[in-house]
Length: 209
Image 1 (cartoon, rainbow, N blue to C red):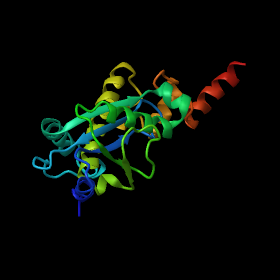
Image 2 (image 1 turned 60 degrees about the vertical axis):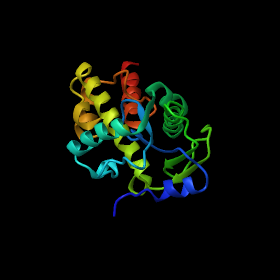
Image 3 (image 1 turned 90 degrees about the vertical axis):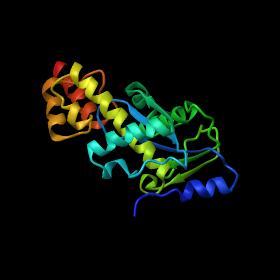
């Protein structure tokens, strides 16, 4: 059983016309921004095969990205590494979600948010949906848009900072990424508040003293 449109139908039955699904990707990586997407689907033109982005092949995700972009209202937004370090990763992921909703080309009047918390500064009624990307078609569409966008961004950064494997690990703490961090050092795109990065910076300072 994949996601369906029942949560959207429920919201629309309660009088909400434009329902946005919202998801983020990139809480766990040691490098790069956290990225969120908000998607308002047209119920008459929902691409077939939408699912939690983690359950789809890279090729299928890329194809669905193009299909969603062609038929839905989409907004993608980020919170920067500096913002993550300043306000913490949970708040930064919510900030990216708030920005994604605010950036929609239409004004949504209800949001389905993946997770168990509603971002505190969201300016519309919303419902938090645990494992929402496996339940709601709008959230699964948002998960695909956010993941593809962030993966492409990390691929671009990898061209400027070779050796960390961001083109394949997307900044997540893979063994090769952690080894590169130790061998090559910390880049401006690493999250200094994350323990593996913080520890390397601390050790470097300790050695230099």
